[in-house]
Length: 441
Ligand code: FHN
Image 1: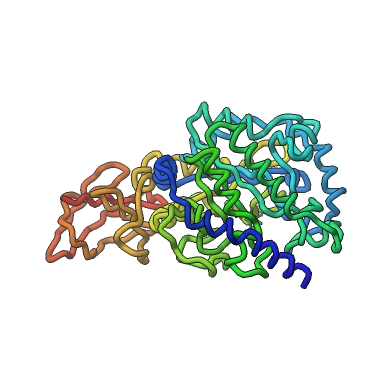
Image 2 (image 1 turned 45 degrees about the vertical axis):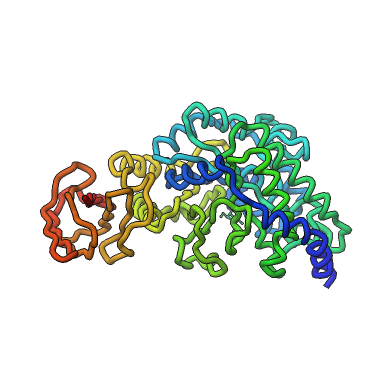
């Protein structure tokens, strides 16, 4: 009851500010250009890394094991990833064909991977390692021409001003009847966002996560509860080209520049997170794990095969979405071998078939038993996930040529009354996704 009352007051206090900010958001020309670039990127790598890598049971270990926040914070004393090499990460990611990296600047455990004057609980001031992970990564990304995005958690399982508490992190030792100070927490987040947007050069996107912690309150109340419009305005003021995304699992709010789907290809709700959102006109992004964990999980061997990941990339592109594929680095700072192997294979496939992914839009043909389609200008790409001998396609445009993307070998075709028939020679080197390019006149 107390919690509901608190939010009602907070919501009414912020309503006026929120409403005007909401109506007033017009993306700048820089922002629109950034959206277009983002949509063309199609493939990024997500990095979940923090103190939780040490226990090696994923990033929710604090909540799942009910670890007291004071005890958990002691993990900072042993944070010393002696093999961390930002350049090695970025080079492997670039070779994997990814165009951007989204890293957890601060996850729900509240530990910041960057130098922050707003809290000593950060990689520089609070650990023996004493290095700014984000600064090193930003430099390596600049050198390699990879864009850098920052994940930022709205939830904090260890701060006492994060009150009223949400539905998670209730066993982490924060007192139930705490006086709290939500306004203070809001200021803290804005101070950190300012740091993120002023210390590391151009930031491709801020990727928020955690609104769902207060999903007992209705969707309309969420912007006011979290001060979203203030945060969005701050971000766009500091870096107009920085995209705002929020993994709230709801339809986008004004001020957001991209729409995120967690573990779901847009339009599907297999993971169960996407029931509360439709597909908007914003650039879309699906985030997905390589195994079953975001943060490093020492026993999780359930890696998806490289072939399945390539097909997943094609399926997201075919829906007009980017794939943000996750890696959870080890506590010593290295990327797991399984992740590196998959990255390398995806990179090999993209080096030949990248035209059918980068810069494409959703294809003209819906998903079929044989696979999916993507489109770029006058070219329609068919992604064949399994061998087929022939295809009949209803296509209104006049076809000029049909060829395999990998080697340019032409395919025989006929077109009669909008019906295109293809005969597809079998191939000894069956790939996870054999791409056919149909070029229209
Ligand atoms: O709770 C987080 C989770 O740890 C992870 O960061 C994912 C990534 O999409 N998002 C949250 C759950 O929605």
